Length: 191
Length: 191
DNA sequence: TCAACATGCAACACTCATGTTGCACTTCAT
DNA sequence: ATGAAGTGCAACATGAGTGTTGCATGTTGA
Image (cartoon, rainbow over all chains, first blue to last red; front, side, top):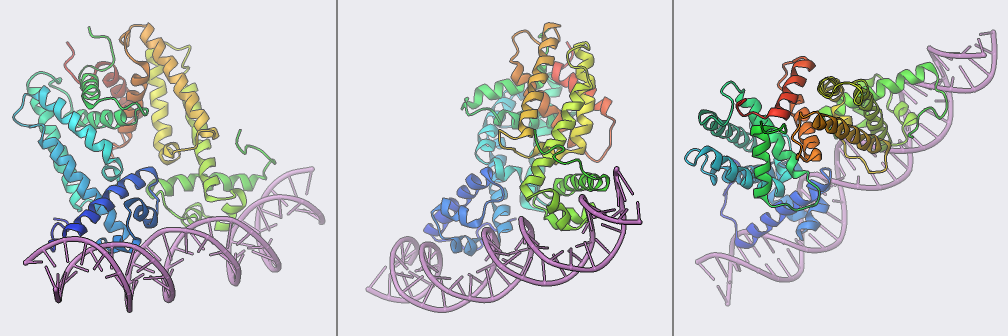
């Protein structure tokens, strides 16, 4: 595990930690090289306060990545990946993930070393993702001879691309529908 | 235009510039925050030499982006986007682009300000890309009601994803075939 | 050949981010 | 209420990267 609950933090301290992580996401998303000073300012906190909770810049980023990865894992679980019908699960999961990835784009994008909590969670999510795709394949939604890992990668790419969308804040369900339609049928004419 | 041929450089100087740009790509691809020192070392050149040709770190990166964007534009042109049959053009362009993007991933990925040469070239490429897709649509390869800009974005995403492939150096034509197949037909069963 | 060009090397000034510490002050938990 | 935990502020040390300059030494091209 990470640094979760080493010593039960006081209420205000926990508030600070949250503010710092959210500010870090906001600031670093716009400029990955931003300074601790800028992050502190955005969090409405002194720079030294950040250093009290996070030993170093890298520690902060790791914590940020872990936090976001946990949210992402939750977003997947909330879609009932292995009980709901495949198409329903895929739609719900996609919509959930779009929201989380939209709000935590930086944190979910940083390359982590393979033995960090964040990396472990991402691997776990990938596995569960393939499991859902397998169910969809068994249901005849995906070609029987398809390489599920390639399918998963395409799926990830489509989600990532959907977030680059111009400042038009389209609702997640519409985007999710387009993603899944494109994933399954491509852009060719529906024969 | 950029800084192309302000004063005709001497032969060895031009060699240095090439070495520097190639080294910058290699080093920065692995660590976007790498120092000029590291780039200079990788280029087999003194750090001061870099500063003689490129006023600042940013100038170097801009030149790098421009250089790569020109190569990319060339890769597209070599596929005869508006004379070859759409499917042939798409395949050739994809294979060419895969090679260029593979070799200049960092340079083509940096966010540039909108009025740089690199950004202009990228916009131009996007326009030509949509033109090819339009021809494919007219030929019945793409659904008549498809949003060509979404198609283009999916296409870009598929190319990007294909490059993340594990260290298995698959040949560009195979990858290109998979990309176009996925783009047109998706991953569902071929009805 | 020879003069302009290019490079390596060493040294320097400058800026900026990081991480630490001490102290006064506020907020929370009980 | 009271002590512990948390915070802001100021100051400091450190390190690293950037950009510049001068000079001696190769290299190029006409």
